[in-house]
Image (cartoon, rainbow, N blue to C red):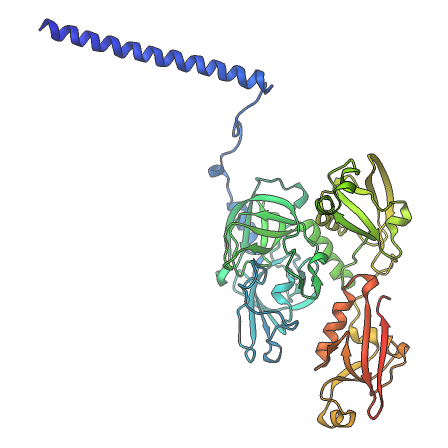
Length: 509
């Protein structure tokens, strides 16, 4: 019995000793940890993440959702059977590109209508709607269904392939709208909502955070899209992890106040469905584009007139030149275009552009997006680093014609001064050809200036055989979107019972 009491007291003593040692060790380590945090790393006053922060589960999205869903519409676009094949010869497979750019387009056989689905955002009470260009590109009929299940026929006011933005109009009044927010004020980590119609599920709201801003080169390496080369795309996307899927394209990205901060445009996906990365055009850029389209019919795009190289590319290509720059953030001026306003202002080849109007520039996509906020004729301050010395120049921006005049949206027929028609079997026999288009209704324009007359049969344009007037029109439209120094149209053709003739036409002016 005595042995049992001794054993009990011995066990109790060992337990108490262990508890005391544990408490002492914890206090010692906690004290040393505080000294390390405030001393060795000089973090006095440092508070852990979340100290006064609002927990994610306490964030209320209901107000933003209620203010947004009624102004987001479902868009159905239809191309007639004769035009159901992609008008520029692109594959209709929406999964053939890791960047699922053509949200909601349904592959169809060539003899069937091409039907596409997407979203749009009402931005004016009288029925103006912003969406993506690729949602309505090539459409002959556009149907808009509102959240209240009212159906309207929409017309295209204008499009801009460089930013992938389109402006539509439906007839009516007192439509609900989403107020514009400030995309420049968005912060990485801030909550946002994506509102749209994925998989034709109307009025769908998903939440996520801003993962990155100013994301460029999203489509680099994927050639030419819609007649605009990948390097000519204006890309400064807001990247989020809000779930978007086929059908969301053209929908709203809103902040927790219910303000429109972007237009959802693309996802990165190898399957065609959301895998964690989505991209939106910031509203700061969208506002400028749609305002120009509404007022002028086309975007008034401003240019610095510089040829740019990324510093990372320069470092790899010419490491010695890179090391002499004495600055490693910005974009390298590799050359100038004809009538360059930047060169006229004093900027030199080898300068590194580091800021525009005080806004830091780290990449070509950021520079292009920043300049695209302005109109030709605006003056901007361009900060450059020249061999370690910081200099600032005032540059008057010009359009792609080298002037500050308003550029009107002119058709190919107006520019060339003619209409074109397919060759009848009789005309083909008379000309001795089996392809080509005939010049018709010639008026003042580029063709007349070159000496071409009515009845001339154009066989090829820039070495491409012509099988229809639409093919010729698309070729010319593509040329008009190139750099000013590359806008040459080279025509081979003939008059019936005559020799083959060649013409070179300058489309730059």
